[in-house]
Amino acid sequence: KNEVEQSPQNLTAQEGEFITINCSYSVGISALHWLQQHPGGGIVSLFMLSSGKKKHGRLIATINIQEKHSSLHIPASHPRDSAVYICAVEGVPKLIFGTGTRLQVFP
Amino acid sequence: DVKVTQSSRYLVKRTGEKVFLECVQDMDHENMFWYRQDPGLGLRLIYFSYDVKMKEKGDIPEGYSVSREKKERFSLILESASTNQTSMYLCASSSYRQGYLIDGYTFGSGTRLTVV
Figure 1 (spheres, one colour):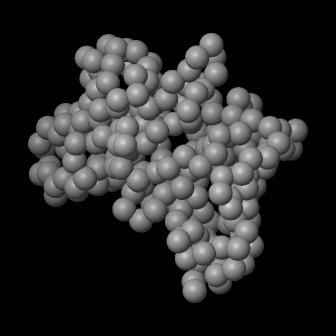
Figure 2: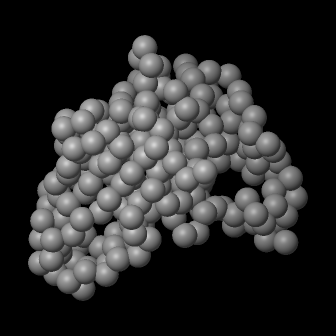
């Protein structure tokens, strides 16, 4: 069993839909990261959180430490949100990655 | 505004060649990492370094070595490239202060290596 599980693996949405991507982990962590990877490869760090909720533009990330679960929410999705979203947990000093969620948003 | 630079975007090498992938960061980060990314497997850690001349094996170090002679530069070496090393390679860096991660992780744009 992977230490970091994401769901769903693939997600297709119409523009304007509310998107939620889930991440569960089984190890103790100091922080959780949400990353975004566009076609072409480069990875951008969206969030680093250890409790509660954070916002990055329209995107919202929440974490529940007791339940070992995090969610990434994309309200009013747009085609430019199409990317792979990766959850990673911090195990000092390295990250443990989920396998990613491929999101496609159609106009 | 580029902070982690990988020397090549695309690379094609022949089986048995010695391959060098270079990564340079300008943020004075002490930690640097090499990952490979394959479909369905996500990112897997090959090697990391937490200081100059220091290195630690990651989850899949076989067939690879690394070099960190200067703080800003971390090189990944494929001693004798094989077709199963065809992959996307990503470099990253990070920094801790008093036990806390600062500024998150910064990734390079990746090198897509094809071994033929």
